Length: 206
Image (tube, one colour):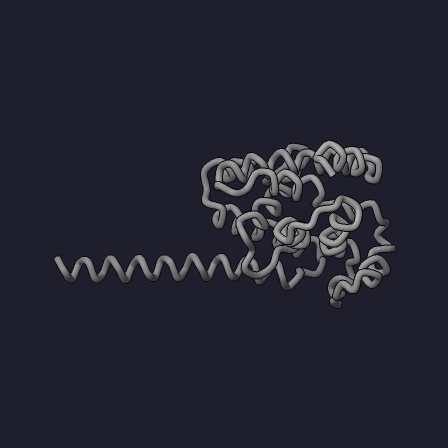
């Protein structure tokens, strides 16, 4: 499928508001991928199709996941909407002919994150949060970060915001979200420790 064909197919399957959101994520992902030197076409397609499984009703998500052999944890059974990410990762191949595993993975991780996220994974996750149609307290600050901060700094802020929001709502926090945040935070701590060690060695040599 060409990009135009994908858009037409997606528009026919999603509610207008969801389709507008998908276009917003695609455009935002392209801008972020340009800034961070990530493949812009992969970002465009992953952003466009990230919510393609939202064509299914929330009540149908478990059945659609089971049909495709997708693992369903306790959190997903309690909050079936979360399954749209993993269903979408398969759906892009079924309906849109997308065979690229990097795009599928970015779609699978766009909602709750995960371990060892690639730059494309992070860009789609963050673009989903800050695209122009989003409107929630703190979104402007997250958009500003996208202009100046590193990708990991952006993700840390976004994941922290997401976890706080979910906790305040009294909902379950998906373990993959906590894992993604902790992994980035630990990476930052290790880098700071390494820099401090280097500075200490340089001081001794002087």
